[in-house]
Image (cartoon, rainbow, N blue to C red; front, side, top):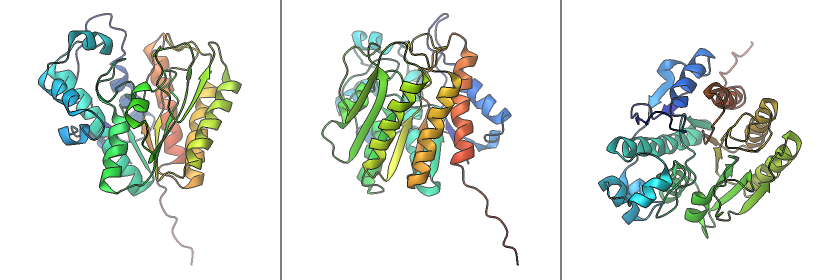
Length: 307
């Protein structure tokens, strides 16, 4: 099984920037070390084309991003210094999720070592997100006729306002999310099912909410499930404000992946957020999700028939 990577398009950040860009490299190295996949199994993500981006985004927004004319106030809301390298990275992040979705339809599972950029809306963006890989992947595959119904389960601590903005009114898609009620973004855009949690919520209530979201998503009878697997609900996260243990996060991952597998629904794994007090805690959180995917979702070799 392969994983798609956007590492070929690095984005230099100023010293002290709060976004943990190194987590992508460290996660790849950790996955290879843990035997999740081999180094040869990491594929460079293709750049999403303008036409693919416009499946979910306003052409004017796509043009402004590709042409470098995004308004300074929006750049500030996004939180990254603007550069051609940033645009290439974000296109690769989207392209990796589209490629992973095609893998999922072919093999039952597909994954990317990036993605989950759920704050990018149809015509603007914020929160370290420029283009919305989840919405683009859903719309591209719907347009191609590869799927008829897509569910998105967003378990990042931050509500997927951009995804909800893009998919509002699209009856072919179902967006279920669990998020911190008082956390960013402060203007929530309702999805099909939103479950807000109070600051300090621990494992039991978190897992109950995740089970509700997954159950609702699968009741939609999707042909594909996109999993936004942010690990910023961990108790070690600087921005999450919830109190989910590593064991609770592992239980979340198994819940999503085992439920989808039991229902026969292909799954796409995207990373989402993570801002641990140490980058190692964030990487370990993402690694746990990939380890669960390897155990539960990766195709298994056929046993030789006994004569």
